[in-house]
Amino acid sequence: MRLCVFEDTRVLGLEPLTLTRPAFALRCGAETILERQRRVLAAGEVGGCVRPELAALTRLTHPGVPINDADFRATVFVNARWLPDATGALDARTPQAGLIGEQVAYLVLPEPAVPPGPEQLDEWLARWKERLPNREAGGLLCDYLWDLIGQNADLLHQDLTWFRARHGQRTLPPGVALLGSPERLVVAPDAQIEPFAVVDTRQGPVLVDSGVVVHSYSRLEGPCYIGKGAWVQGARVRGGSSLGPVCRVGGDVEGSILQGYTNKQHDGFLGHSYLGEWVNLAAGTQTSDLRNDYGEISVTVNGRRVATGRNKVGSFIGDHTKTGLGVLLNTGSAIGAFANLLPTGSLLPSLVPPFCQVNAGGLQELWDLRKLFGTAATVMRRRGLELTDTHRDCYDALYEATAELRRRAVRDSEARRLRRSV
Image (tube, rainbow, N blue to C red; front, side, top):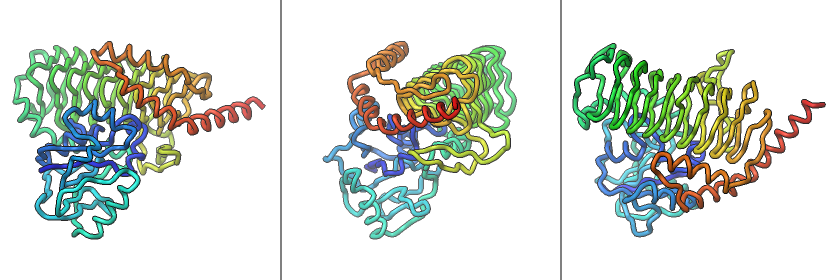
């Protein structure tokens, strides 16, 4: 099957994570969306159609995948937000439109085609939806980041079978306490779990990938996934959590997804949250994920307040954002990329646009990009990676694209400060 994964306009609902990556690069379970689509659908060659501002960076992060390539033609087109169910029931020989509600999850066209640009894509999808027989696609189309968090535990249960087939069944290292069935624990051959760690599989599988180090006095509660090269440093990783590659995790993590290369080494609670890459949570950073009246939580997404329908929602934090010691994050916080969050002694604002700093409770614009990118380069170099000109160009474009949002938020913050002073 030759498959093209496309982004529609609703990827904006997955901000701030999709400000710096295509939607198919987001994680859920033990894989990214793209990895899951390739495996479940048994796809051969795969191409991608992403927003133009992300095309160059996506080519860098997904080598070998043609991105926005006018010569890449396919008959099967899959939505970048679609999490197919485990059966992968997609007949690539029969033209059809796979729907979830009224949204297009996939198209199977009668002949190979190249998708149009982003401006015409929604109209193109609507035309094929009308022309082709409609089928129920199954699975889930993720509209918001909390959809991924809500689905994470179920997908981890599904991932147990293929993860065991990949890594085999290994004897538990000596000195490790296992609560529950050993059949639900899969540890990669080169992963290390030190003595006096506790692994609890009673509520779901615990999947430990290659190069992982789990330090003594850590607790892993299923369902959870510990990604390649991650370190769990005396942490309590609770059910429904997925840690991406090369994360450093301490303290409490519950029902959360860490995209990768994120540092949460110290004590502090992170619950029902999604963190991007290169995020650093300083010691004592606490995330509220439950209102004290147990009410429904709303989140600001793409400039509007959205009711989540949930009473447990933490924070959504973009790439390269950092917190100071003892920062308190409110329920339903949306923090953009390259934000700097300093402690105030109280809950921080629930909306912080990209390239902003919270200081003394107010918002300030971070305009010195050379300094910000210099710090990002240092952080990436510590993990053996490089901040390239492609990264800089993408982040420069993001800075310009979010300028009005940032300035409006700074003006509103200053107006609130003046009202309080009066």
